[in-house]
Image (tube, rainbow, N blue to C red; front, side, top):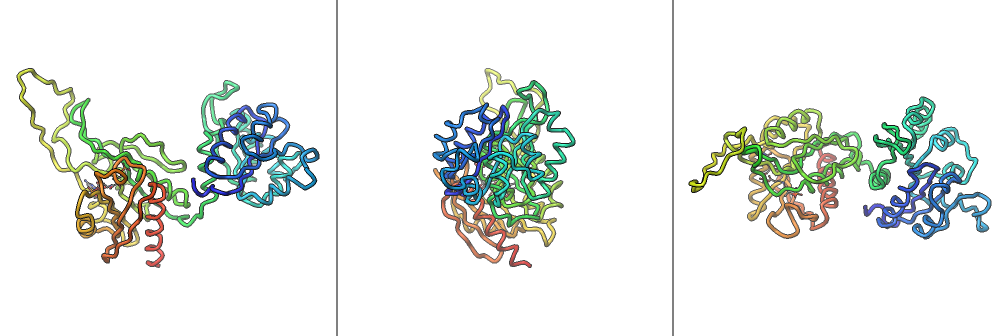
Length: 403
Ligand code: PMT
């Protein structure tokens, strides 16, 4: 979330039950280093007190155009100084006023003066949300360049089930980061794989590896943040899928091969981060293999899995950019360069595995990136999200050079 550091965010809160989630939203923004100004409607104050937001934001909260002026035009000042503005939750009433340029309270007046990007997070009863008039107002705002975060679907406070729930605060923060990020991958289709594959032996046992999915998910998230349309094909992991990414869940190497090849045609950039199992048991038993008391051991026969990356390298179009990863314990450069040739790649990113701060499971990584012409760029040890952005910078530079 480093992009939020030192950024000025305006947080508007209107009168819905979800207003309590705005406390956590404010806390997350502050934790990410943002300075936050808060504006609340009179209805919002009925759900959560002003003091909570004043203490957490360390700023006066705007609730009244006349009482909070402190000798200056406070609402104009906060509108002018913000880098991004968000209304969460946004009621149907507030959405209607913003869509039609009405400014009859402190919040709507303040937001009318904002020139920075605005994110609106509607939260209300499902029937209200689906009402044609609310949808029309949201369309007007969207056409005006206002960002809209669709509500979550679930059981609402009014006991209705359907769309209308305010998304989790971390999702709202994620979308604010998205608004502030340069969209230098806009218009590009990126296909990423992540995680391990899992090769079943019987219904309870499998062969796999230590991949946590963190590196591949970071690459998918970074590409989406920068405006790409992203498909992520992932083996089984415990990482939350990135917001805004089309995520396809697979288990085995064969499943992953099928999913990658199905999405490959539409992709401009393909980044194979997954740790694919090279072998699988020759047969998958339908029943659990029983251990017998007189058994010394057992032999498992393995057969080779398809090499997904090589298959893609063999059939890729000249306009597609194919990136492989190489997990090495030693001879990093020599092994990685061999893989570029063997698998017909445009680029390979090699990382050392088996160490404490790079490779499998870790939150950090360090990459040596090799191009077809043998040139090398090193990405220093950083958290995997930052490493992913540096990798995308290198890819973008290569694509610019192709033009
Ligand atoms: O998931 P994390 O815990 O964050 O860990 C990240 C990572 C270490 C898994 C990742 O950074 C990484 O190195 N991924 C590649 C792992 C790997 O399989 O490396 P390899 O050198 O064995 O394979 C080379 C390339 O061929 C890889 O892009 C791999 O996806 C691909 N491959 C390999 C075998 C196979 N049958 N099909 C393939 O497509």
